[in-house]
Image 1 (cartoon, rainbow, N blue to C red):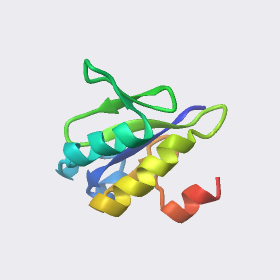
Image 2: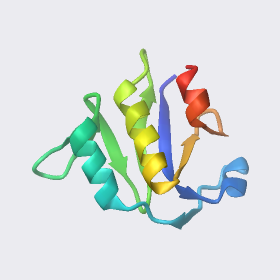
Image 3: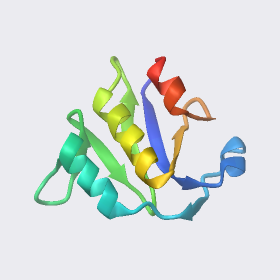
Length: 106
């Protein structure tokens, strides 16, 4: 199973009920800066981490995370994005908010 990490400022109580409710949008300037440092932003605006596409949604992003192997670029990106913005990390496949400590143990 492929797990994607969804990152944004969400209503955590809503996530427990499988409702993705964005409280405020991510700062896309921070997102793009970190992606340029840890991944790629193509000339036409496509975003990628570890060679895998990053989806920019309305106020949040979805990144590849657990596949055949862990996408370490996503983990570092998530760590830095959360430190800078205080965003929530959510694994929709497991229906769980993910902490940085849990991420380090995968």
